[in-house]
Length: 302
Image 1: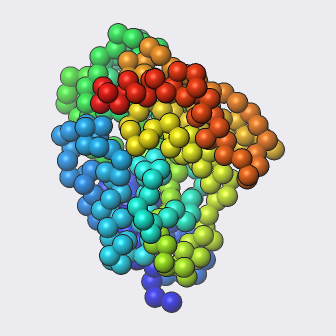
Image 2: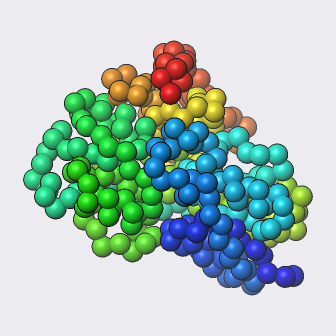
């Protein structure tokens, strides 16, 4: 068959992800070509994501290209993909997860500051809320752009540190000093590369499913079901991380208020079965224990 056309955002990290999908397909003896597309989220670096209407901001241009048959598949960082997909688009494969954690990157001049003294640059409501949960007097600045842009802004602007995804640092082979942040729960499906396809392209979708990592799929579907049940299309400070240990899954998750003062947490281990929607189950527990009121408050504030 002809080459599989792989659509991607045109940032260095997104191109790495597209090449990784291409490598997996080539290892299965399929030809590929990569088509970079500038996304709406990359064109506007001045507004924080939550003010743009974050749902789909990094994926909609690739969705359009898929629906217009300009590409055969689209490669995304899964945490950027809305839980509600456009009609005729589906997620068809997940690469094995790597490095789901958030990490702290400091300015050299801030090396000796304690966490509670740091002025942080992040536009993520989740990262802000989890930080405030532990350090309620923290100050923040908005920061947007790819890893290189954020690191440049860190050096040039008036803040002490920023928080980045460890996956991006490792994938770009960046030699950075970083600190792990156990206080954070990762964004749902952080550290996972996914492939979206057009529902009508059965032959190509069947090919791409050959590179799917089933254990990763199991975990991220729990996380995304948790997110979907809670959010109702709203951007909220939600962390969720599922991990397989032997025959069990451990699921850690939390919904926090914007100021971090109220957090409803889940930390459960269970034996997985395909018939039960565990993400929805635990999200409903959160909603029944104050989460419903918290989500209303978050939506009103945003």
